[in-house]
Length: 163
Ligand SMILES: [Zn+2]
Image (cartoon, rainbow, N blue to C red; front, top):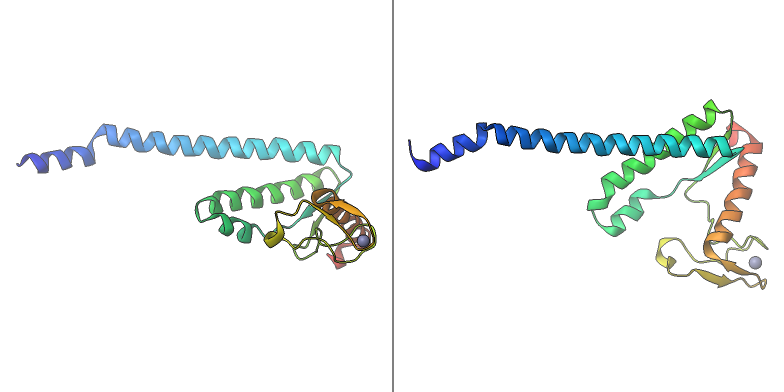
């Protein structure tokens, strides 16, 4: 047996290698468990504290791919899982749950006059403050939140057929 042969056999079948694999598998399982626990606790808290939840169905794929491939799957999965768990918890606690469509222009809409004068989605992500033609000065996120509340409330009142 050559030295090289011996080494490769040793590496493939060794206990150390198996242990290492198992260790990695255990770490992955623990991370997954922790993430599940975190999502579980967070969603229960949100459902308990809210009468209704309006979730903006963001274009996760588009956002993730803009940042590169790596973040995509974990980020994507976590957000999807978070949304599904949150919906289930809202049902369990008898809370309203509405997904607001990702095409709803929450950032563009002026919450004061209803005109589409705000920054456009991902391409204008850098614009945090803007002034509408009506004179209203908006904080990007604050304005979007007001719009989401209105839209969520409207959809919830309209009933399941509208959603
Ligand atoms: Zn306006």
